[in-house]
Length: 258
Image 1 (cartoon, rainbow, N blue to C red):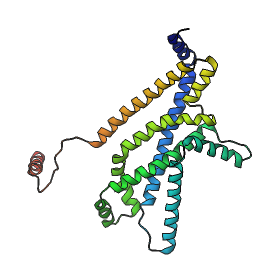
Image 2 (cartoon, rainbow, N blue to C red):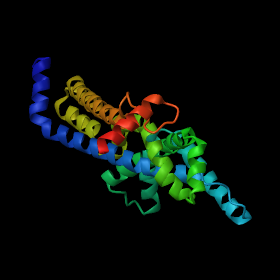
Image 3 (tube, helix red, strand yellow):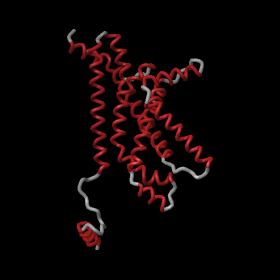
Image 4 (cartoon, one colour):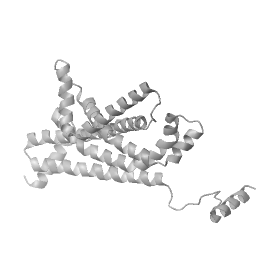
């Protein structure tokens, strides 16, 4: 059979396996990114809590911040493939050989790995917000949690959306390492197909194209969301005392309401 015939044969005969692998890849990548973002937001908020004056609370804050720092450094400083093996087989070691369900295990591994990166992304996003935003929130009686959830985090989410999009795309590709514990994502399915057909190059070329289509499509969709959140490039600040255009516009709007 020719190269083209082999490719067509793989697609027609094993399309169910390829689509199953594609679905599991998207499920793990999307869910892992969402949970990782939640971890990043929670740890980001905790790390920015002002130090308490109470010695006990201050000690607890430092302890929590130390634990978060260790978590971030460990999971950012080791490969996800190694983390997968340690977590999956470590659980089995502590539970008499009983292993975690594969898909939940894959989601868990991707989530905590992503959470380590998201923690630093969120922290950078919080730092980038002007300190006057914090001071203004505190001046009207908001607690740290209220200030973060109502004032700071909405601005942070807009600022870090490109980084979140990048993490999602990275997770789509990094799910391939989960095949070492038997998670049936796209790469695992391709490996299974090539052992049955011995068409190694054709099989991996097909999934290469599938990965590219996934990442390219999702990147373009997320860029549309980024542009929507960024708003219009041209606008007028209504009510400004220093911008004459703003004053004119305000007058026109008042006249329209009469």
